[in-house]
Length: 275
Image (cartoon, rainbow, N blue to C red):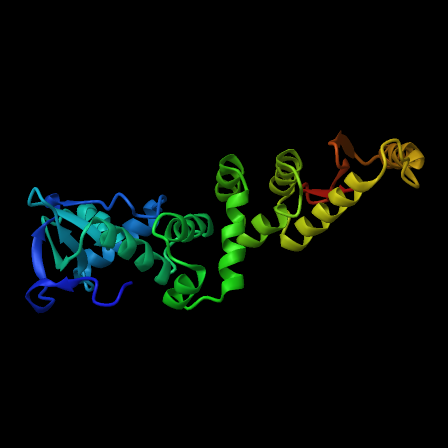
């Protein structure tokens, strides 16, 4: 499908094109551009120029559509460059879209949700098979399948996961829960408590285990929780009676009871114990 599908004009000659004439590719799979990264790239371009030319195709109105190099183009605009080096290739709209997606995937230039969406587009819109995509990207089919499964998470969950800076393994762990409601509850706990992957997986295992228990089941030891809380309260009272200005706070969620005790150090800073 992709062999000899496009060719550069003038033997892949690099040309200086007006950056104002280059429009973004509507099929660019990358949706988020970190400003700090762009500023760093802009500084490099300011010092060294654009080392790797952009790839564009000519459109019917005489402008150019970007195929690859959007970060370079955005950084060049930050620098104020009026012309940018580019290679013009002979490609139609569909070929341009495919090349843009594949170029980003091959460069690992996407976050894991953008990557999953791009892979899905290759399969569902452009009719490629997983075998063909795997060959083009050098990825095994199980890897592709795992990435595509991430799209089972609804858009709001994906947004929250990305905003919290969680990993792909966090996202895959959430897929082990059966309902969006459970996933949302788990994600809230993971974010609030800054859980790593292993801790998140334990939480999700416990949530699944609880969901399988018959309603009305009283967990072993549950009736003793109030006794434990009272014991902690007595301990804090004893600390205060000893002349130490300790304070405590208790909060509850559907999954946990959190008991926090703060004991000032002699230096004036505070020590914190969570139960």
